[in-house]
View 1 (cartoon, rainbow, N blue to C red):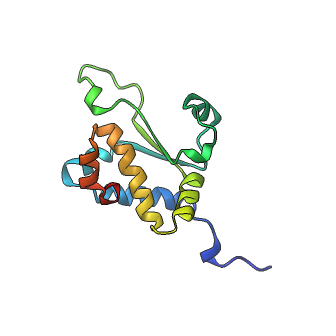
View 2: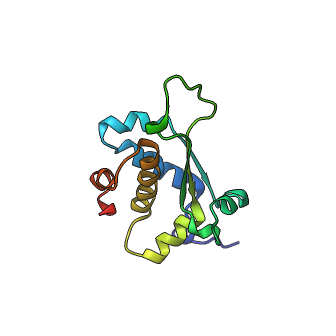
View 3: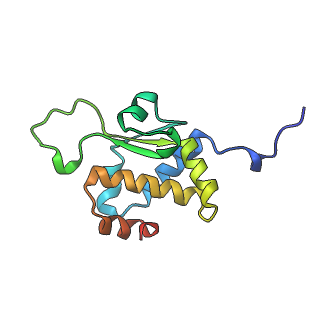
Length: 136
């Protein structure tokens, strides 16, 4: 039996998650540790309910999603019922990576993670650009 060359195998869910953790480890100090408290989930696609709720025509349109209450809206008196989660969707990320052809997979995953973290931390576009130069 012949197996495909490793370079022709699509990056796995585990690799996308590893790249996301690496992206978090390179955040500026004030955000690095708090970002580790956000749960990372990697799936091939968003589920049908998410696609419908967001009014998407195609699940390939969504590379990432922040699910939680932004820090700017949290109260210390509130009881946390669920952890904040950043969802990364492998197939849409891979499609965008191939379509772009001019960025590494690590750069794209970092970009998606930073964008989702912006929802959590309440970052402005200027804040994002300082952390992710690709945003500019």
